Image 1 (cartoon, rainbow, N blue to C red):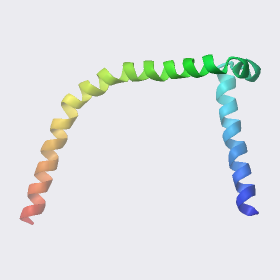
Image 2 (spheres, one colour; image 1 turned 90 degrees about the horizontal axis):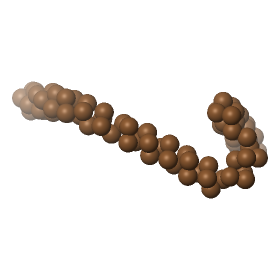
Image 3 (spheres, rainbow, N blue to C red; image 1 turned 180 degrees about the horizontal axis):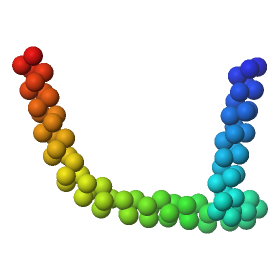
Image 4 (cartoon, rainbow, N blue to C red; image 1 turned 90 degrees about the vertical axis):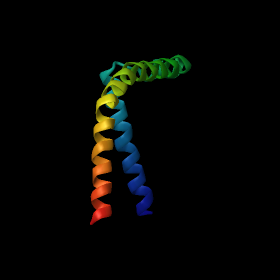
Length: 83
């Protein structure tokens, strides 16, 4: 029984958090239910747009970060083999 109570409390807290976020974006629950397919498409489009925005910056950062990481990784590997 305590597992059920804690699960219900956790679900209530998650629902509260999601509700607050949706209210911040002025989302009406009735409108959301009526336009659910369009809302899902819209949310998916937001995620796709975020990925399209982030990928060039991730690639740009990787050009600098990955070679530096590789050098440190190889140095650590050599140091562990000698020791």
